[in-house]
Image (cartoon, rainbow, N blue to C red; front, side):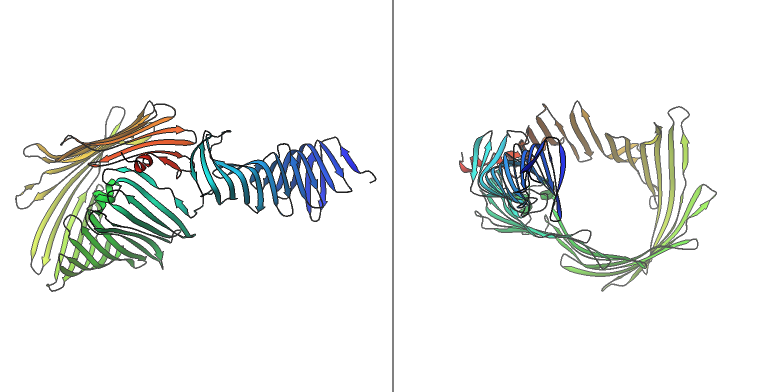
Length: 636
């Protein structure tokens, strides 16, 4: 070629060979300076080299140095990462470049920069940068920093940081970093600031989350409670998918006013090793009122019994083995019950001709109220269900048990009996057809104990009633009513009937309960039932439960609705109808502010209350402005 450059005035595609790679480019007008090996792409320019693509109004490509220059709305894409700007330069050899007035999207939001430098693979240095999760332009809020270091798919480090809301500065931090990936990352957690009825003003969860490895992490936290002092807490987790999960948490406080040193320790462990299932769970506390004073969850501080255990079990072709260590502590009475250990074996059920048989044993060493007991039990059973006259099932059975208790004579007992049951079907002659299924059964059992020769008899009767209906091609259960009774051999009469009923016919309504029916006086006593209703009316979701027992009556429920498109309200209450007292209540009001969320919540249980008001970013919920900050710093 003798000319200095060649000009193409048509849209075309040129393939240029460089070393062992291809550069693909096209434009409305293409000029090629063959002497200096410079390509000018003018008008709707596009260039692709391996996993790098560049589109702009104008692109200049220097082939020898593999440098790209672009201006006029340039858009650079490196693998999955896209950056737009005003002007940019990029080195295809080193994968380094600079973008002026750039903007890009990362996993949790958008960042901009007056100058953006790619200094390494997936590493950006940003000067005069901003970050926001709001997709609007201009955004409702953004974090501004004089300089940022962005590790794509990892973290953002920035200093100093100013939060702007509608271009108004709200607060300043000298240094801040946050993850921009869904993976776990070490870092500080945002504290919780507020006020409670027992703690007074507080700052909770001044915490650091530490990712030790892919299978291990830990959290160290500090709480400041105005009326009690500093409380330390921590947790440690070890996990391996489907193999191992271990969780340990604890807390400690030296109360400022009382001088009491109080603490709590809890662990949970699940593992599968060498064909064994290992499960453990335990809680230990310094005193009975620790949970009442410090636990925020209602169900936990109401629990008055602590149970700790470690169980190891294994199933083999010969049967099922189980070893248990157990400790039970009643916080109200202070009593302990310990099982150290309990070893049990069950051979399961096996068939031998018309017979079904089973065998098992149990070895227990227990301690209660300062006394220890060792007990060894062997047990077995044999049964042979038979069908008689096509409609009846007759089930003779025999169960035996041998007990050996330390320092006491051994005892042997057996139960022998027979049961008879059948099923009766009926249906209505009108439509829709209702089916009635009755299952009456009678069983007789005789028990003897040797060598003392004790003897007892039992005759039990039961009647199960099931009402069904075919509705729109599906079988639906309308009502179940079960009655049970037994024969009193001393009084020679039937005992009162126990009645149980339930109505699962409707998806949003349920009724279940029971009572005792005295057939001699035709009285119904000990009535208890629960009625539950849930549904949705005109955009409001609601649920209500009414519970009645012989000694109490409660009603509780909740509702959630949106009075406007941006506001949502959630209310939950529990009321004691006997003492005419509102026991528990909670209210939550939420205002959708596009990328922000304004939340007010109030909870009360008895004399325990707490309220909180915070404004938080939806995509970064750990960043929030709380109601408790101003009164905490400037008390009334």
